[in-house]
Amino acid sequence: MTRFKNWLKLFSVLILTAVFLWVLLHYSIVDVKKIQNNGSDFQYNIISTASIIAGFLFTGISILISALGAERIKRLWEHNYLDNLYRAAFIGMLSDVITIVVALILLCINLLPKQELLLYKVELSSLIVSIIFFAWSFYYLINVVIRLKEK
Image 1 (tube, rainbow, N blue to C red):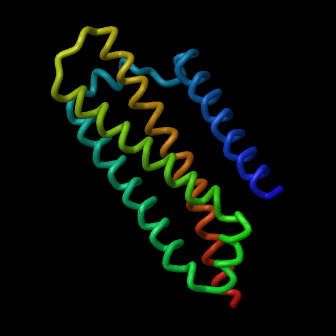
Image 2: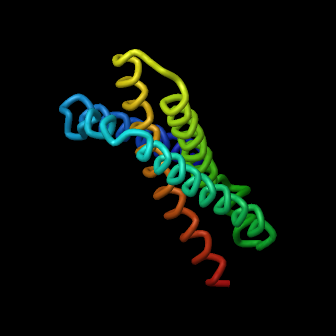
């Protein structure tokens, strides 16, 4: 039952994130043209931000792996209570890689205006997804640390 609940939570967050992104981009709440006008400086900042978030997520997974030696955490792992922690971290890291690749494409390749606008939307979307899943991973990781401290 825990596995099913974990998958349900994961897909719920993914769907809510997709709806959130659709609203942001469809109703022009975030003006992609303004981002486009910032030029290459913005792309370098995006690359730095995505790299930092990915680094934190990787560190969080490393902390989880090192904590598996503790009996309490090992039980949580064996009974699938930590599945969404590593899944959320993986989705966040994957989103960060997509953000970095798209930023590099925007920096290095001359594109048609429509293609460029689409890539800016993809870049912004993947960055937001990574931030959301970073926050979710952070929440799970804090819970793991608290359970370790209780011991």
